[in-house]
Every structure is written in C-alpha cells, then in structure tokens.
Length: 339
Image (cartoon, rainbow, N blue to C red; front, side, top):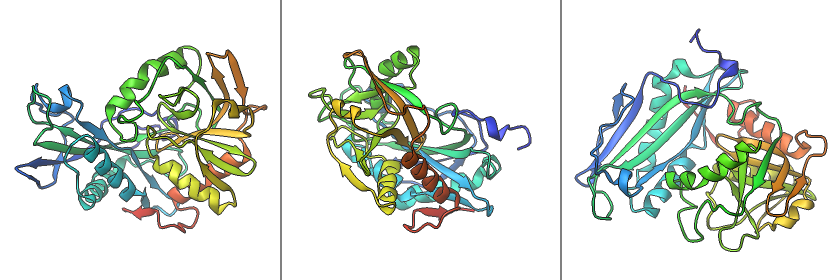
C-alpha cells in the first residue's frame, strides 16, 4: 500500500477490502460470508438499537521481522466475547468460528497489514449485535457477528510515552453488579462524559473509582490499570472491571521477570506509595502514567518525577511487544501464525 504512511497512522477507522459476517437464525449459526460492504441493513426496531444488545472485542495482527503475521491470544478474545454474550442474553458464538473468521479477515486484508518496524498493526474489531425487531424488552432471536479490520497506529498519541490521567468522582463507568465485566458498548458510553472532561482539561483519560464506595481504583475509560510497588505488580480487583487479556498477559510476564503479582483493591491514597503506573489493553498496550490528578482532593499524585516511563513498565511493554512480533520466544503459546 504505497499511499499509506505506515509510521504516522492514527488509531482511527480506515476502509479496507473485506469484512466477514455470520448470522444466527432459526436456532443456529449460518455460513461465514465475505463482504465488501461497510454498512449493515438493520430493522429500525433491532434489539441492539433499543435495548443495548451489542458486544465487541479488540484484537491485533502483527507482521514480524521474519515476515510472518501473528494474532495474539485470539482464543481468549473468543472466550471473552462468549462471556459477554451470556451476560446480556445474546447467542454465544462458538470459539472455533470466531478464530476461523479472525484468521480469514486477516488473510483477506493482507495488503493492509503494516510492515515490521513501522509501529503500526492491523486492528480487528469483532462485534455481535441483536438484529430481531423488539419493542418490548426481551432478547433477540437473531444475531449478526462481524469482524472488520484496519491498520492503526498507537491509541495514545506519541506511542510509548507517559500520559496524565484524572479522577472525577461524579462519574461511574459501571454499576457494582452491572455490565462492567463484559465488553458491551454501553460501558464506553457511560465513560464518555468523564473522558471528554479529562481531555478538555489536558488529560488523556479518566481513571474511575469503584462505583459503590468511591474509595478504590477501578479502571481507565479505555483500559485496565496497574501499578508497580516494591517489586510487585498490583492491579485492581473489582466485579465491575473488564478482564483485560493484555493485563492478564502482563501479569504472567511480571511473574516471569520475578515480580510478585497482587490483584486486590487499591485505595486511592496508595497512589502516593507506588513507583510506576500504566494503562493497559489491546489498544493502549501498556501506556505509562506520569501524573494522576484527583479533582475532589485537588491533589496530583506524581508517579514519574522525570516524566519518563518507569523501568519495569518499559521492560513489560517491550517483552509483550516482542512476543507479539515474534522477536522473543513465545514460551506460553500465545501467538497464532496466520500468514
């Protein structure tokens, strides 16, 4: 693709050649369809539009120095999509069909996979929606699953550099026993006001607190949160946090590097004691945090005194990236070679 500036891609939609689709109808999933259409023909009363029956995933394909194209922990995305579907009474997609379609969309859009060394990757967006007409509140009987793909750069501008986040107590991302642990669009809609306020004030994201007591760290709008303290990798434990596949992988890598891993409630005040902090997720990867501003207390927790990424976060970030690109041995069997 000679007209794409691979090194300066933003994290945004770009039209590519194909997407793949599959429909659940009459009690079964149908055949996989390949489409060049960017639109969906939906009934105006579709359950996804009125009652939020919509779930999605995020996944990346990486071209390595060896020319091979790899997907990272694709089965975990398939499992999480199934959990989300079960959580809001949608039809779970079989894991093998998810994996088949992910492999297919990568191969169909091969010419859009960024070259090794560009800092970009091919981002996959799998989504499932309820398409049955519903005016009364009830689950759909028909569903559509789609995966489309596009080349993207870093989620946060500047790539692997520190960013600042803010805590605003007047916003909740999810209810204590709500949909926080599932990847549904409504969670992100709930976070948009806080994110908009954060960006208006010069921060990259909002860091939410637990929705019940407002005492403990929950997660950032687009990502999970982790901290490094006294040779420990600490990440919040909460029923309203989305289980991040990236966070799960970083925890294992932290153990591989000799760190102790703690998944537990993190009180806001403990931010004064941590040495490093970061946002982590498929899109954010591991984005280091320099400062955390708490508006209610009018207090800034300075995490990085020199404004640079900390050594542990840097090591974890590069180790994860190296595995994804095939530059470090895949000791845990996380990658799938597609091409």
